[in-house]
Image 1 (spheres, rainbow, N blue to C red):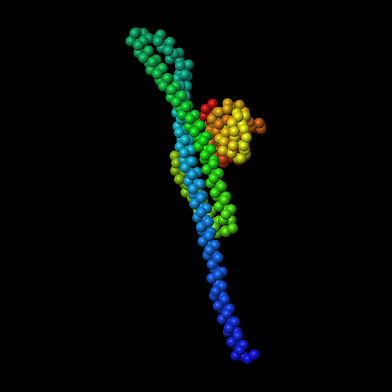
Image 2: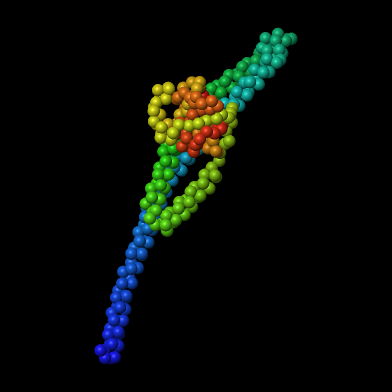
Length: 300
């Protein structure tokens, strides 16, 4: 083969290779661009579903917080009425001069007797008003705590739905590290903003006879029937106690979170434990294991 023919063949091969390279390069780049677009759309869909679930959770949480504030106010009013009545009873017990009979017998004139009768009438009216206020505060506390049982069960479902959306999104996006990282960044920012907004909500610290006790808990997905006959499910706001009457409403506090529960079962029978928290309570308090909790009895 002549030198000229060899050069011609070499140039032809180089030209063909170049043309193939020009056509093949876009073909390789296209899937990457399509994948990026697909990942972005998947992230947008996942974040959208997450935001819907978060909005629902935030709305329920707001209603629960409003009810909790009302419960605190009712219990505070109840305690104030109890303190006033206790002070009156103590004063009467400690001072014979304050007893109605001694007060009347100590009158020296008709005018003095009339004034003392007027005083006793005012005291009696005041006691009656305190008793009525105490009864009203107790009724408010019971009604609010009962309302919270349903609200908190809804709150527990909303928290589960939020966790479910996050888990589903991570599973869907796990094939793409970039998409998963983008999803985590966006949901983390959303969660941070929601937490900041929640911190701005005014909260009462609560009053009343708070005590401490050791609590364990049911499984999150427990289903069955309590000793009271009440059906227990994954979102039941119930608690087990060895002796408190069925239907007793108790508020628990753990890790800065609070939840109202109704006594519907007996137990726990492990030494040193006072309560078994039901599945719904576990979800609302984010409780796991055996820990000390604060509690107060709302009504029996």
